[in-house]
View 1 (cartoon, rainbow, N blue to C red):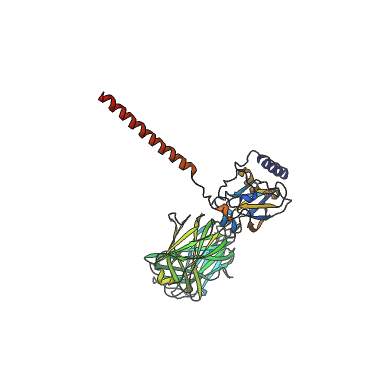
View 2: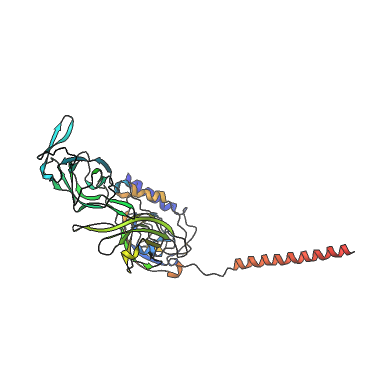
Length: 460
């Protein structure tokens, strides 16, 4: 019945095409470029990720100047599906307070024994310290314990929180997992927390990736010079139920502008969601501001301000060079760097822009092969029953899910001239001005004649 319902929807969409026709009629050669779509001809609904070359050569940022043609040159119903991360792509977050296991200053974590206990009141653990520390006020946590047995899914990341100390530090972090508090196994690699001052602004770095661990307890141990910060809580992030999307990345080298300013041309209308700054080797820490605009003449729009860094500590590297952004389609970027000369010198910075491609969902109608055509300065978005078309991809029945298809290499159709506006003589504007000037002359002549008649009558 669900398959029969799917066929009814498809037939309704095809039938509706006569009602939902475009106000403009196009053929393939009305578009600058095209690419052949490789798909399963036995399926009715298909989904094509938007190729990079489409973003480079469309005139409209909403992708309104593209069409899908069949072998007979007819357009077929299609819709653009924008990427929006759902709750399945983001793991659930749990906030936990940390249990501090105290010991004598300088005491090893191995000197503290934990015993697991289960009772009618629930599960708990008891601490046995082989070295009885005197209460002198110098006791510090030897390690921390957080109970995670109530979390159903595997934990993929954690963020540690602490009260700022108003001084810079870097500490290595060892995360271990256990179900009985006796046998511990590694739960992460190269964990590091840090806090540093840049221009009077304290920045904390407490994110640690885990090995998708599922356990009843996690143990957190800090190691480093001096007195370690006192941890307070942690945010535990479950492994997302849906695999993260695949980003496309495009490297771009800057051109130099004013001191501390660098300009980038993305070459198209990519839906930018992340920018990654490629820093030179060594320890680097800098404050940046990112702006964008649609054309070289347009004003700049502020997109983000951030501190990026790339540091080494005891052979371990940790960095924050990616900036997450609200999705935008503007072609030109500006990077402003504080004290750029001391960090970059005469070198030009490089960035990488990242995005998740939109998808073109279309219905098989007519003979294959199908052609994706794009790039037309006069095209408007096609009007098709979009809501019903996108609904097909949200059903549980596999027969209703659009089949994945791909677009091949691009080739010229009508050529690049279709991307630039026509330079037409403004005949209408000239005629309008001529009529206005003629009217002014006529009014002046009539006024002059009337003045002469009034003067003659007064004299008489």
